[in-house]
Length: 130
Image 1 (tube, rainbow, N blue to C red):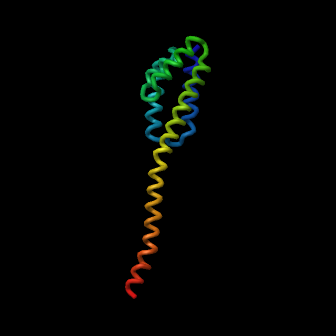
Image 2: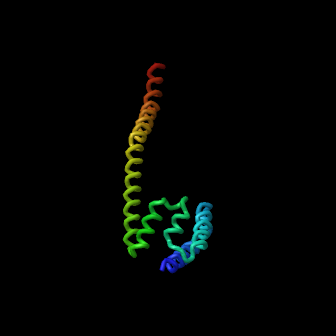
Image 3: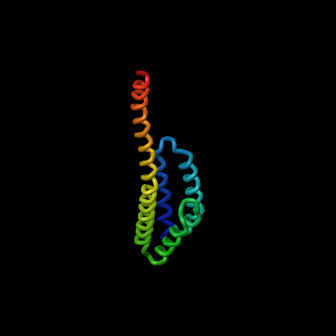
């Protein structure tokens, strides 16, 4: 049942935590939140534990996991959630790259102009002296 899944998740999270010498502050906060959620939902459905952690999991994840739990196709639903959010992240990264490229071109153009001016201004000043 899902109680075993939650137990296995707790065990996996504990194992992953052991690999960190000194976890950062956000990891400690996440660790405390997950431990609290898993402690509250020992025998409950995984979807309820995910829905309780709104800071880390969007509502869609809990709903898709609930559908997977009720149909017995949790692996398929988790795969679909992963595919959906992979597409979302890829789209977001592509949009950020499209926004950053023009700004980066302006900055590089400014640096080239500054380099050009730093070479030509001393030469121009020398010519004016003579």
